[in-house]
Image (tube, rainbow, N blue to C red; front, side, top):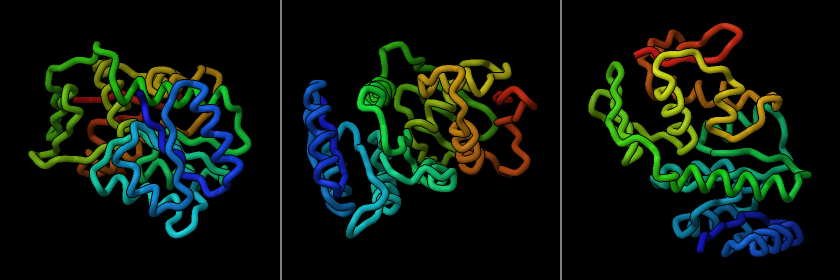
Length: 225
């Protein structure tokens, strides 16, 4: 069974999340502080992470999880809804971001969507993709730049694969949200832009003047080989 780790210091909320997740068929572990969350993340299939935590805040906990090489999906669940908080969390490797108060059914849907993407659906391509100095192996979900390994968060890798699948065609933000995040087209979000910025930072020689991940004015993005 799938194990979800909830890192939340509010006991009532943690209990409510555990109940909802267990009712949906998940095994749930709880951690009340960031340090414990980091230690237990390695045994989880998905982490739900608060940002305002004792001992180690959520940002540093997320950074520690990614620095340890873990690609476990991380859903940030927090009362901090400012854009700057979201940018920081996505930049550190968060895969989704939900603000409190939240709908339980929506949260469960996002958890299931993250797990589907993390585990794959058996139809993803296996042929190695190359552009410029970049080599992408879909089967192992690894990326190399000029022969050096590049650590991408799971959602960053999914976005890169989505752009590759469109073979140089322009893809709208709405289409990318549906394809990568399973959002509906009418939801407005800067999530795509934030993740594109991270991809450029990691893959482009000059992120401010990208050679490969190109902005298409008033539409979205395309990948130029």
